[in-house]
Structures are given as structure tokens and as C-alpha cells.
Figure 1 (cartoon, rainbow, N blue to C red):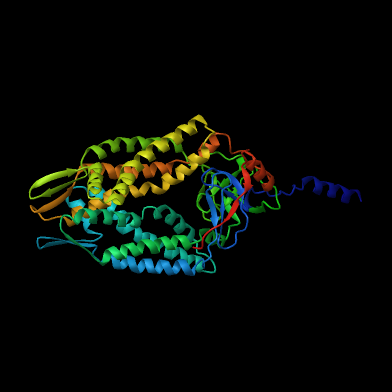
Figure 2 (figure 1 turned 30 degrees about the vertical axis):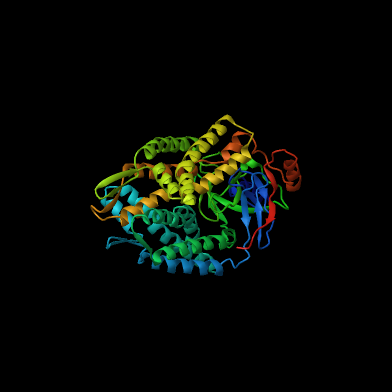
Length: 490
């Protein structure tokens, strides 16, 4: 008996304790919550019926919109039409110019090619990229996105293509190019006989079909069809389990713990305070890097603004093109070109050139500079107005390319040696640099940083209705119910 007892005690003494697996850190998807990309306010997003939209309760930024049309079939139809128009445009002629029996034609390719021949290859590459290459890429990517979204299981490459599409769409400037065609036409009618060819009507139709594709495409519905992975990784490469909560039945996490994916707008709770600009992980839905704010936003914006301001001075002092008639050259600056349109009683086009080429670049530089300065000071007053101005600045920046497109058309079509000739000048390069630098400056700036610096983005509350009421009474709140409104049918 004693031997069995002693042997049992010995076995218990040497038995190793069973090791329990360490719990894996987790990441929580916060459903029903949306961060405003303009002011950083986290808001409860209610379900939307077709034809309705949700706006930020603080700054008015549109957060979501349900289209009345089919989410796949309608944009597919417009995308196919855009592809057909684009391919036809590549082999079509835009204009035919006749000077004393001598004729020249212009297409999408002749402008960039002629700028290369005159030694302004940088501007030629820019014009060719935004008028020839980018529209084709955008149409092809949209077709691929719609194909992937129509599959029962969305392919893994679809989220990547959607991110590329968002980054590339702004650089497709067909709608700006058609205005450049009209400005060039108004300058040519006094010089020679100008006939508009089928390419002008094709590019006009392409502008409308591409806009209709974007208008009927519901990006959020596509993201909803994308499965959220059960695991993802953090910045250190550690695997995280993905859990789910909903703001209508669970407590809303603290503001400092949440990150909104910049690509698919998925809100995630890391369960700890998240740094502002460092990468903290990978989105479990679209695999995009997660960070709360853009890194070095103010310093990068200031750098691009200083460079744009430096180029703006020679862009207005130096001629952008020279018109030679019977051997007599006549240099023209941007302001001189607007004056000529006004003297020709083409008042709408003159005002358009003045606004897009003179007022807009200056307004962009000084408004962005003021926003950076307001962020550094932590300004609290007028942030709603500044945020709306930022959205306008970000939208109208590319319309300043009208003059660059007009010059590319003129140098391509007016090539009659001694009789009549138009050449590009150094001012055109400087002005194109101003446009691109201001676009980059607007992209670098993060408008949410203005609200952060003012201390208006803080801890979150689970009661969306109470917070909305507090905000309506004048208090600043990080969580509120998104305003729902009627929107016109797409």
C-alpha cells in the first residue's frame, strides 16, 4: 500500500504542468460607424434607402449615397460605351485647319508629339498622360472592378484595382481637355477656316459617359460584398484575430483607439491608443496599410506650395506661346491671352481662362497656406468654412490645365512655316509645374489635422442621438448620427 502511495506521489511531483496557449491579440471591426474624411468625426451611419445620402453632421461632407439604379448593370453599360468612344477617339481627328489651301489636322497624339519636337518633352508627357494614357487606364480598371464585383466571390485583386482607380481617376482630364479645345477653336477662327471633326463630338460624349459611370457606381456596395478576413497583421507582423461589434448594440470604442481605412473606410478598434501617422497594421478587407493621419502633412504641403509659388512668377511673366504671322512674332502670356478673348467679345471663355488660369492657382496657394497656418495655431473658429474650401480647392485644381491643353492644340495645328506658326515657350512649362505642384499640395494636406489641432476630435460616446443633440447645441462631438437627406436619382 505504501509503495503504491509513494509511487503515485512521485508521478505527481515530476508531472509537468500543461502549457496553455497564449491568447492571440485581436482587432475589432466597428460596424455602423464611419469617419468623415474631411473633419475626422466618427459618426453612426444609418442604413440608407435607394436615392438617399448621408452627410457629415459637422462639415457637410458626403459620407455615403445609395443610387436608384442597378449597382452593376448601369455602370457596366456606361463603361462599355466609354470604351467604345475611347477606342474610336484614338483614330479620329479633332480639328481641320485650312490656311490659303494648306491644311493641318489635330488629334489626341499630335499635341504631345509636337511639344516633344519643340523641346518641351515634360509638358508633352504630361498632356499625353492625362489625355491619352490615363483615360484608357481608368476605363480598363473600372471594367475590371465591375467584373470582380459581379463574381459570387470577389477576387483578391479587385480591392487593389479599386485603390489604383481612386488614385488615377483624378488624372483623367477629358472634361478639362474639351474646354481647352473650345478655347483653341475660338483663337483659330480668326486665323483660318476651322472645321470641327468627329473627334470633338467623340471626346464630348466620352466626358459624359465617364462621368455617368462614376455617378452610378456605388463603391460602398462593392466593398460590402468583399469578405472581411478572420486574421490580419499589425505593424510588427504579428497575427491578429478579427472580431466584430456594432455601434447599435455595443459600446463605441474610444476615439484614440480607432482607425479608419483610407481605402475602404472600414473602422477598426485596436484596443489601445494608436499613433497618429505611423502604420499600425493591414486592413482585413482591402489589405491597405492602416494609419490615422497622413504623415508629414503640413511640412509636405508647405514644400509643394513654396515650389508652386516660385514657378508661378515666371509662369505669368514669360510668354506661354509665340504666334508668328508672315515672319512677325507675337509673344503671348496667360493674361494677354485672356485679354484677347475679351476683346473678341468671347466673354464666357475669357472669364473661364481668368478664373482657371489666374485666380485658381493663387487661391489654392494662399488658401492651403492659411489652412496649414491655422493647423499650427490650433485655430478653432471657421473650421467648417475652411474644410469646405479645401474640398473646393481639391476639386477645381486640375481645371487650370485648360491653358496647357489649348497650347498643345495650337502648336500642333498651326504649323505653316513662314505663313503662320505657333510655338510653345518656357512660360508653358512653368505654368504646368504650378498646376501639378498645387494638386500635389492639396493631396498632401490632411484637413482632419485642423480639427485635431483644435482639440475637437476626442473621446467617443456610444449614444449617437445624445451626441448629435449636443453637437446641434454647439458642442463639438466625435460621434454623432450622420444626417440623411434626399439625393437626386443617378
